[in-house]
Length: 453
Image 1: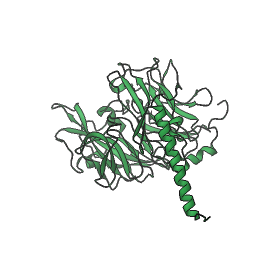
Image 2 (image 1 turned 90 degrees about the vertical axis):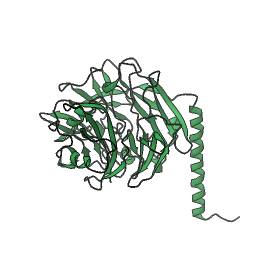
Image 3 (image 1 turned 45 degrees about the horizontal axis):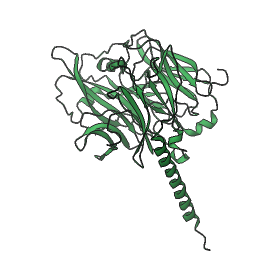
């Protein structure tokens, strides 16, 4: 009997394992079509709890600790003196809540940018207001040591060393729910100020500098709209998977004829740039980009309008004109999309349907299967600025999802969905994601707070 060459044997073995993994995924997907995965509340009233946006790191590297925010009111805009509590939930100790800090710089849709610092074993960051400035706090939850940087953060590079951020004062005027109350926009009467825009923040030294101005981008490329009396702003920034570039949305709103009040909706272009604000590219020039996520360092999944297929999810290749629709039948509605580690699954949700149910689901990229995770009722008082989107976030091991929802009847709370029975085992080769902390830090970090903290 002849022996297989070692390389041939390894290739055959790898193929067999991949096929076995695929069969498990397909079987699990079909089984889950008839039943929903387990869901449990990890926060409770009488206070209200949420995490907010879907593209931030909510889980620590060990998947044991989950970040959240606590507030004692709902259904109105935050005032400058409204303070929220920053906390951490221990999933292995009865979902015990430990308060870590406070913030008076926050909004309903994106909170205070609370998140774990990438490449860190125990540091978190969030925004706050001190005196006449918005700032970033960085706290080591193991030691209690905290440092403060004199500018707020938005998205953090995968190595944890750099952040970029827009002007939250301007966002608060242009789109309430995403900016922060308490400080006026000094350029409120300017349509595209040269001194307002995106700043780069060194999270080690605290140095920050303006790298992209609104004045520059308002003149960059072609804007698909009548630009007479439109006011410009930036929102929704996100680093790619290797930190070489970041996305930012350039948005504009028309003003009334007599003053500086915004009227109507907003237009949007999706652009990318290097961390120093150079090599700026227009990825989507058509004016209607919505939610997005990096699949890898070069490709972006986004809900947008494109002349080829209208409104849909599209996969864009940064730096080229290549764009293709994604899952038009399975994902026909706008939602907050991310890729689970390995990019085989897309995690997504919807806005409320006619019955005011928000649907959370997985989409299996190789097979085109859609797996529902739950339909969560949104009471009618949750609308506009203070609506409660589910904003699904996944754990670094890809086995759990946490959402925000008021469907339990006690206001917005956080719920954990166990998806391990759907996605199956995640191999080492699959553990790459634009939003995952390094998995090898987990073995070095068995308990961030220690027993009884």
